[in-house]
Length: 247
Image (cartoon, rainbow, N blue to C red; front, side, top):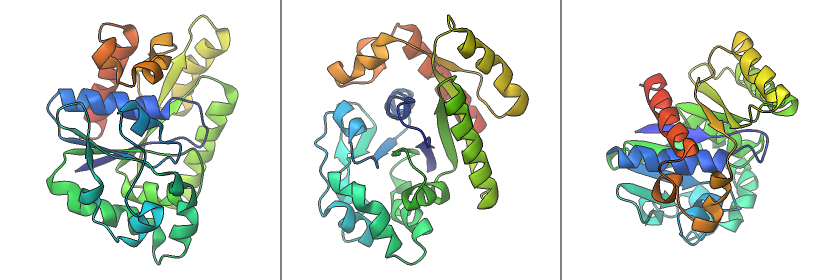
């Protein structure tokens, strides 16, 4: 099972839209996909029309009181399941802190699901925390959406430095630009200059589009209600890039 995490230290960059749309594309192409909503805000759960509630809450999850397969909920989409968020996930850091080898806890919990799914996508909260470290040790790659702004690029530099300091050489970083508005000079300059410093950046860019914001109204991935839009096509191309890079 390939484990991918939609992650950024910074909020508001399109992490959940990335997780939801890529999961939908992968499932539509025949993969068995599981989304794990780790963000206590529960946006991915909301988009998939699943109540953000987990039996036993965050404590039950971390302690392993329930097998993860017992927490899985079906969605409206074939081959696409979800482990929803729970508001108690806001305390996951404290719960992980009480565990031995907390950084390896998430991967251990996910391992039994490998027989049932081809791809697991983690929708992560914006932070650098024990939850983040558990994600880094569980994931094969981080999908890092970046808005073409100075602060967004700065947080990516912090992430690169953290990976180096923690010696996480096996963790792939797959940054890509999101909410790109090529009418803005800064967006154009950053998008064009970034690959010189970070050749790992994916070539696909997600455009700024109101239809992405409409996901919150439709409570569905773009492919279900706006399949012919540029944004929907961009997510399809992005998934092809990610699938190639992650084998």
